[in-house]
Image (cartoon, rainbow, N blue to C red; front, side):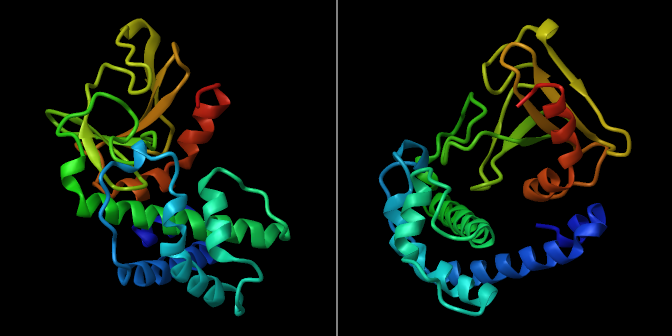
Length: 234
């Protein structure tokens, strides 16, 4: 993450961004010490990631203590397993619930990235869908170069080539139902949408814009998400 670019994009949120950076750096340090297990299938082929909850519970507890100044008043491994299964409501106040979700999502994302890095042989050499072949996350952002378009997963960091004139989500290639728009002040980034399935993806043109990592580009172009969602795309 390019934290300066993020602060420049949202100067009114500098305190929030600073707190997010500290949490991220602390979690990265904690998870870097974990022994990444061997797996036999990709994360997208698992029912959920709850089996890894005990593995990341220690890191999440340490980060929780750093952020709040006290130990969590709940079983962290149990809460992480519950979140992995899709639950987002807990018997906590709103601030602690949101804090728990942020810690969990960050820890799982870093874990999935390390799992992918350790198991490159599990990732297909080519992929013809808009969801990540390793973790199953739908692509939110991609990059155009002279001769190719690549989509990139902001969760695990995997990138893969994808045709320019095809919807990544329903594989529609009828140009009459595909389109794009831009936002004033955001040079070199477009929203490409599909009227057939009502999905969209943001594409950064590296020929017109200095290249940043996918997570940063996704974060500093939230205006495009708001515009797309206002038009009924998801």
